[in-house]
Amino acid sequence: MNDDSALCRAHTAAHANETWRTPAGVLAHPYLVPAGPYEQLWDWDSVFLGAATLPWGSRRYLEGSMSNFFAATNLSDGTVTGCLTRTLPTICSSDPTTQHDALAHAKPILIQGAWLAASAPGGDPVSFERFAPAMEALLSFWDRPPRRDPASGLRVWHDQLESGADNCVLSRCPSARSSCWSASQALTLASPDVMSLLVREHTAAALFADAWADAAADGAATATATATTKAATATATATATRHRATAVRHRAAAEELRRTLNARLWRADLGFHAARNTSNASRGGGWIEAKTYAIATPLWAGAVNASQAAAIATALSAPDMLSSVGLRSTSADDARYSNADAIVPYSNWRGPMWVNVNALACYGLADYGYTRLALDIATRVVGALAADLRSGGTWHEAYSTAANGGGGAPLAAAGFLSWDTLSAELVSNLRDGVNPLKLAPRRSASRSPVERVV
Image (tube, rainbow, N blue to C red):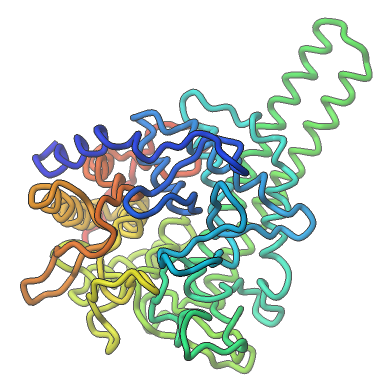
């Protein structure tokens, strides 16, 4: 482990417990917060943070975070906000003047977060079986209009803010916080990130169903071996059969999402998946060709073939995307590219380096054999975070990718931990072929295939 990685690992080890919270108010389970100015339980923050800090005891807090979201899910329509607080109404804004500002819906990342907790050492997938109705409700939410565009089958964000990339250039106007907003813009943004997240959600749902089926089958075998009533054996057997069928259904759903992603969003001429505005996509238009971090998400979801992976890797390694401190959130060639130190009303996703999406890009690249490129990106990211620790003793939410000497300057939210903790083992994981975000039946080391050079 080099000096930069060792410093990031030591900082994570020393401060990981500062993100842990005990049950309080409407949050009945232990949970995670990003630290810095944030005391809320956020959807993707808790997944990345929880997975990154498993070696330092976060498993029960990751499990509890997902349990809190499942408990808050409306079982009738699958609605749940993208952040939760111990009191109601939920206030998600970083703007202290905001009285109520809950995100429209949680990102489709909760089931995979639950699987990462349940399949880690000390976890048990059966502990989540009681939340099976919530998981089904959450997935059904994305399978019907207005979240599913009837013409294309693409899934859409309510607005750019809901995606987590608050003001990313994929949206002409980010959200209702902006004076440019009109109601017609809601529920029209189809981008590769939401499709990729849903591929992983259905994959995780299938893994849970497999585990529950295995547990029920074991129960049936035990009932038979101990001469328990025939009714008990029959019930357990029927439960196992039902869960097996559920696993098959979710794997088929994941495959259909892959097909739709590649049929509707892949642009061979660009070398990556573009986004679309579904309000006019049915007429053959609606293309949003802006180049952002989102082009890496299909790699992370394992949703592309080898030639697509090669094109995406080339696009990510181009100078407009790869800065001295890692991948830019928006291409430097975009007219809207900016490294403004902004957090209110939006965190800036128009240029700065964000650790979470760099990490998922690195793991996605490595899974397709581009380990050298992944290590190059990871080393730059970890270097920026280590430099922040050396200069100020803390981390920030994002980092400038300016090429004029400002690269690496910390931006917003001093004291931030959250997904910055992914830096602790990013380089060593890539070198060892380990992907802590991989969805697999057990938490085991995942070796990368033979490396391809970009």
